[in-house]
Image (cartoon, rainbow, N blue to C red; front, side, top):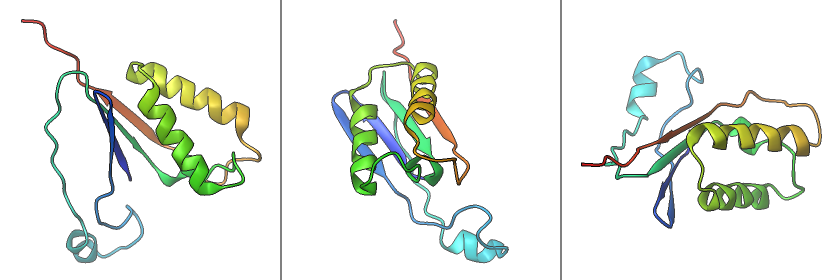
Length: 116
């Protein structure tokens, strides 16, 4: 599952090494290939995690352009996590070219600024 982090004006993509859940019955193989990453979130940072079902939706003729458009949208949107998910859902409903062929999971988390 890719992870996007929006920090101030910067969007960073993290793609840790590993196997998808359910792709092997071997716990050892899964653990051997798993890469864990740690991030220190700062005030107003947003994390967006999503399964490949989101990027596999046939909305554009060019798959790489679709992913680039999605990252540009996520980077430029200044929304709270709930609103972001609602907009993504609306966009999927409006622009998908056919029935969904894969499940879609999107998780969005934002660290709010703490006023002292």
